[in-house]
View 1: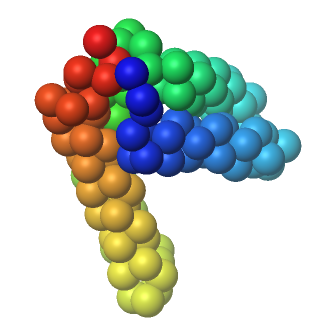
View 2: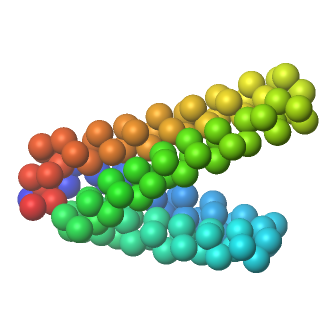
Length: 123
C-alpha cells in the first residue's frame, strides 16, 4: 500500500528528533545521557518502522507519545512551583508555551496514528 504524506512526514520527524537529541548528548549528565540514548533509539525505531508501514511501529509511536504526555504532565506539575520562584515572567511564559505545544504535538500524533486510514496503511 502507498504511504501517505503525513506518515512520511512523521517518519522523517522522528529521525530529526533523534539527531537533535544526539547533538545534545555532550551537554547532559550521565542520567540524562542514558535517557536521551533510549529516546534516540526509540525515535530511530519509530521512524524506520513507520516509513516501512509496520503496525508494531504505529503502536510503538502511540505508546511512546502517551508516555511523553504522562511524563510531561508529571514533570511539569512537579516543577511549576520551582519555576514560579526562579524564572522571570517572560521566560516562564515561554516555558509554559513550549510545554503546551509539545503536549499538543504528542496528542496530535496519537490522534493521527489512531485514524482508520493510517491503521489500514500499516495493516
